[in-house]
Image 1 (cartoon, rainbow, N blue to C red):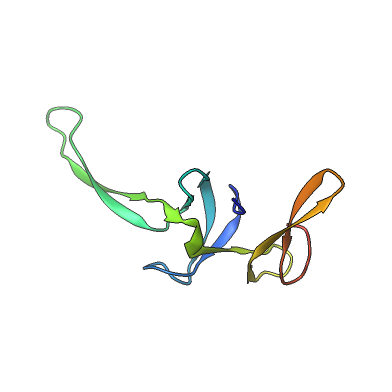
Image 2: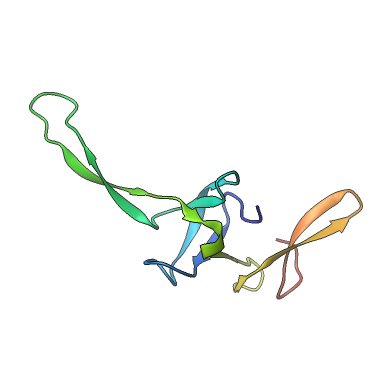
Length: 101
């Protein structure tokens, strides 16, 4: 997967279209990522002890990796990611500015 933990991404489809955020977790087997504060879902939580009240909690749900674009740290644009192999090292590169990410 071309998106990794800690990358800044732009959401290109869905209810959060146009918003940016930081990747908290990358899930390559599922083909998805968790983005901080995006794709929020409501979850009902029961009371832990007697006398407490249950509540609704917002949690981030997994976004499909096809619905996001990486924001290049060099040119600050939403870009596609490519790879460049130098010797035995494989680096991610920005498709617009051709710089290492």
